[in-house]
Amino acid sequence: MALSSHFTGLRAIDSHTGGEPTRLIIEGFPDLGSGSMAERKALFAQQYDDWRCAVILEPRGNDVLVGALLCQPCSPQATAGVIFFNNAGYLGMCGHGTIGLVASLAYLGRISAGEHLIETPVGTVNARCTRTAASRWKTCPPTVIADRWRST
Figure 1 (cartoon, rainbow, N blue to C red):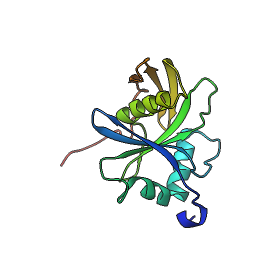
Figure 2: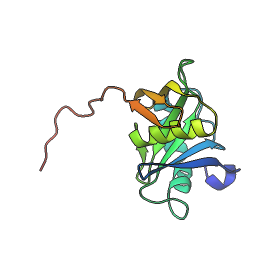
Figure 3: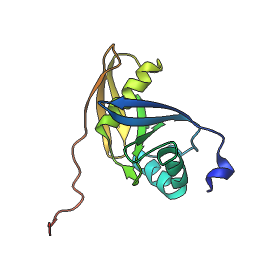
Figure 4: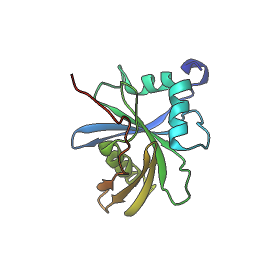
């Protein structure tokens, strides 16, 4: 689907985590359905990659910017779902992006201090928001993507 035929505008907030920028897309993105975050990430990549490019690339983005698409979580226990992306493609998880997500949601008054479960395409992340909108995160277990790897 072409960006121009469905674009009505996006609402986003930019944050910096120790100098690492994250652009959180809050609303205005096409509906990715109610599947898992991994399924939604696949749909995003297949049908809406032009949106990724518009959000993350020049003239309003750059090669160090990480995008974070805020999604409704699958689990009622989770605070949010998120799909991370950058100039090269899609990310399963992003540490500084998770901190930026939590800090931005706290700044906007959408979450309060405490523990929050964040669903990502690779699993659920436990994040803690403090009263100062700072956050910490504990990621999900790593996933083996290849059982034999050789360096040349």
